[in-house]
Image (cartoon, rainbow, N blue to C red; front, top):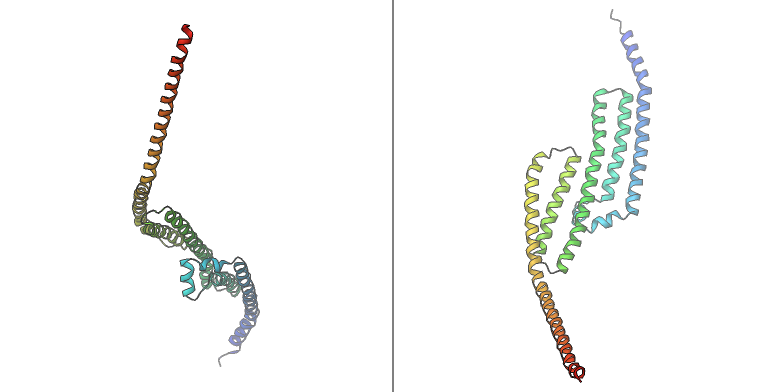
Length: 247
């Protein structure tokens, strides 16, 4: 007769031993869910008080985010929330003693700071570029520099590409091939923009230089006439005093 009592007792003992561990893991997950919600809410409040969505909404990047149905506040709030969630999930998995799943979650949790840093670089960089290009465009248009729109488009594209590459580096995406094309492209665009600005400034400054030289010439002529008048006056005085000295 087969004895089934021992396997059943062993299984029951295993389950009874595992139940406290399972309860502890569930408690950790509940705490993580609460802490994640609180952390995400705090991040959302900070960003709302800083008027981040309104500031970003004035840029082309902000319009693209708005069209996708997202907000910068919601994006960073979700990232912080899920970062906290995953930390507590990893703790629960460690309690349950599942090494393979624990290693996977550990890699994910270690990657999230890079993900947040890349998103931060992308958002802040593109916003800064947008405001910088508006300032540069206003300055060039105020000076009536030709091809201002082309210059601004070239600079914005180049700087945006640099920011995107930096963000990809933060996300641990291989960008070596991008750098291979980016460096010659950057030099080419920079040289073209410099030549365009030089030509534009030269054309624009032509009249200014001509007026300046004209004024300098007129000033020199006036001073020369004044010196001639002074010499003539001095010679007349000498002629006037000479007869008196002889008497």
